[in-house]
Image 1 (cartoon, rainbow, N blue to C red):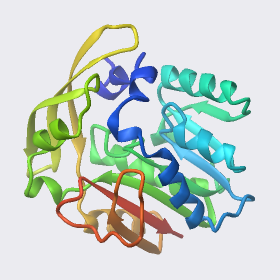
Image 2 (cartoon, helix red, strand yellow):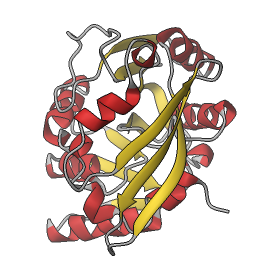
Image 3 (cartoon, rainbow, N blue to C red):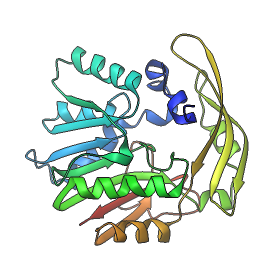
Length: 253
């Protein structure tokens, strides 16, 4: 049986690109460029690239980017969008837990829960970090966002999602945050690109900063910085607080 995240992204590329949480692509790519010092020689891997929004934007800016995702239908949408822009991009179907690359990329990006934090066990999420680290060159850098475990200690996840959801977006209900596992269990309802309604029982892992720091150190990163993640406006000036739903992580080998 397919996992919830596999079912979620089937025939969802068109609607996914209208979700409120994916509207910050250009600003996020501005930040990524600054982190790379605008070095166009860098090779980038976009893990959990989805419909290719960051991959395509960075390619348009002159970077060589490889996008990888588990979902064939999301990749089909990514290739369609790249074709419209007359871009030749290597989009690969693959499992983020089993990345086949070894020291091939200078920078890895993994944004908007691109695989990491969606997996059903902590061990699987860890495999993603191990694979990303292995994919990077000796001085490689990883830029990713993940769910901030400090947020649900002080706020309702369901209320946050409801306040930040536009008409036509997926809805998240019956949220229950488990303090023993730091997983949010919820019922996600959405309409796919073919007009079919899906009701999925989902859960996502929230992380706290010391966990992320320790996990990254164990896979070979030596410098780890964590900030609050603001949609479309990533910045090293934003100190992480309990008000941030996501955290922005920058890790260097």
